[in-house]
Image 1 (cartoon, rainbow, N blue to C red):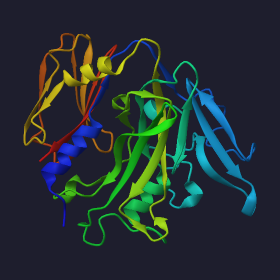
Image 2 (image 1 turned 120 degrees about the horizontal axis):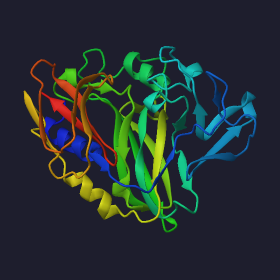
Image 3 (image 1 turned 90 degrees about the vertical axis):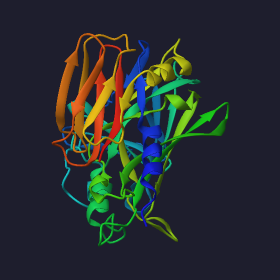
Image 4 (image 1 turned 120 degrees about the vertical axis):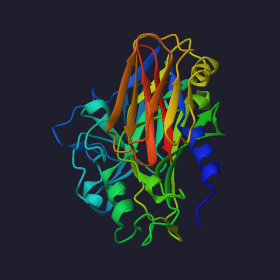
Length: 334
């Protein structure tokens, strides 16, 4: 049976609500990493352990030479643009077919990938990053393959899910703090709300507080005695760290002063920007495929209303952007 919808929506809103409004930050765009067009790097040229750096973040990689050689753990980087080919031979492509904001390069991570930091960022706040599915996992969840099931099953009612849990080390120990993000979720009572993510979405890491390093752990409803059947790969871009002077309370405070209600919504949703100080704000409504349905600009923060009567029920995203503000919220249309 499907889980209680209200409880699921509350949980979803907790982990996807995010914002930051800070001046001091460093973004790992990965554009400093050299690649030929439509290619990837997986460590094959430097096997048995290496790392690469972008911004303030350090990304370990391990390539194993046995059995003909394979990418064993950590991160690879890519500018592959194949969003349609199924199977493990297309392991290094993002489902959106390009990096965030149409940039070429992005990272591919796998189970247990770790991010370390240099002295400018270690022990400070991680603001977040954009995350999406890889093509390999997304098509496997949609259609099934020789190992993994098609999410939803034959009826579409199976409450399947594919989740990324981001955990932190601080002071030499892994803590209980974590941020969860669903790359696919079929647990809704209304099957039209089920989704496999194929757009870049911001994941707020500021609730983790001060961080020495991060670990990315994948879990899935499709698992057996030998582990997860769903391909355990995902993609990230624009990983953002806070530099000197940024604290968790400052970031969290910005998150609390923007209200989007009601949520879930049947027809009219209100976006209250009255407490934001940023000017020249854009408020956009996008569907799960990344299509911008509504785009409103305001030079004086206030309440904006969207009429969603013409749009079908399902998952949408409200994006609020300005010179010093970036907020993404999930919205459920009934």
